Image (cartoon, rainbow over all chains, first blue to last red; front, side, top):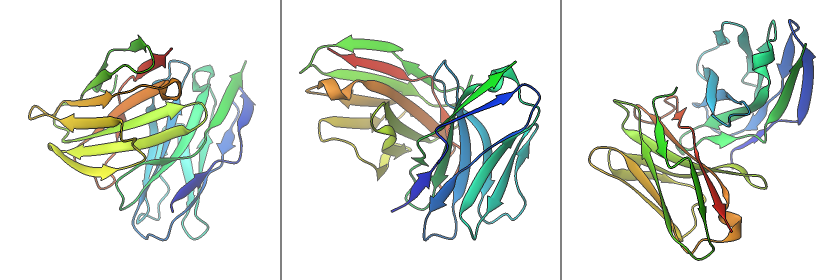
Length: 113
Length: 113
């Protein structure tokens, strides 16, 4: 079975600082996709970043970047220059050949002034 | 705004009742997915439809059913409701499947009393 593990239930960071959220996954597949979604207090699920497993280059989106280690099955999210609006629940997710997104349990991030 | 719409936003009903949740995908998207987010189960994939056909099935209860119509909107029907069905139900859409990014609607919060 495919599983996604987020071992940090909660994290906090001060504005303008950098924080890294961890995610590991388990799969026997070679072709798959990984995502980070953000869920702010509004409960809307917002895509943060996407990574294709066949690409060695780490994905970046403005202040958000990932460290994708395929052999280690690790997919961490780095948020640079943290902003108050980054306060949210962050979910790591995996999709493979079974066509369903498998989510981790989430990391609650609090950005303080 | 992801472009995915869901109605209603909130639904309060009693045990044993039946409700229908509606989802309209982003323009051009052929795949629709349904997810359930509850406190104890986290985010769970329920079912996927692609261009009117069921494509993938997750942990969807037999009391739940879904369909996708020719205009590509989708409905999730929940019957014989139990207290444990109280949750946030998300619809997501993507262009096709196979790892395409899924964009989420705002969700329908279902409360069963």
